Image (cartoon, rainbow, N blue to C red; front, top):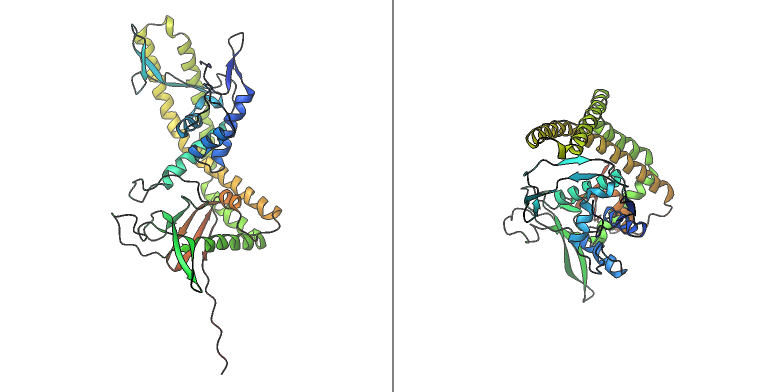
Length: 371
């Protein structure tokens, strides 16, 4: 693995790959900030603001360069071999390997900077952001934004499309002032393809107050939260037979991976036709096993994710004394998404699987006049 411009790694005098700790901290920062809710362009701006250089020594970072680091499997100590291939041995021209030659995954080829859990969490977060930016018809309707804590978080409960932030004008005692509100993009007239939705807008401050009210209620009744979350976790858990099958698959995949590694090491001394045929067969066998394992692991990861989020929520409820003013970090760390319904009813879906519905603008009952 070349390390000349590879952020986080160097090659020592013996030709071994070693971690460059100063650069590795930059890599860890990028992964950490992404999981904290920042977008790639926002992370890039922060790196430039702090004067941090890229792997090539440049001072300019882009969202794309940050994205490539987040997608780089080598940071977890593994290597996907033959991502590019040589198509002309005279000119040594290399191109991206789009099913030209078989690719294979080799584990633990060098020291890891990022744990497998962190790397996988980032890939899942990328998937989550892609999915939440789609409409029910599977078309992209928005871009990821971290300008507001509510950006990309709220959706319409009637048509399923994203809610957008609107700057609205109101007046009090003859003086105009601006307020921020969230409304279905269809109702707001921002989607010419769809018009049949009349969901009400909700003031941003009302969303903030509704969230904090739910948090205070959860703090008063934590047992209800735990019981509801455990029911969700139980549904996502693997059965004993599924757990046994997962263990069998891991053993089989490891055995196939060892055979691929051994074959790759002997590649230069083996007949090319036999080598390619054997390698393709092993990779096909590995893919079939991995597909079954991935399905089971997705369920297991969902269970672990829910358990982790539940424990995080419990810790917050136990350690936070005051839950009065809206807390951005608290919202981002606990809420998966929000659904805005008619009559300003809002459902907050917590990352631990718990759901709470509340009226985001409770109107005061007018006092009866005395007779």
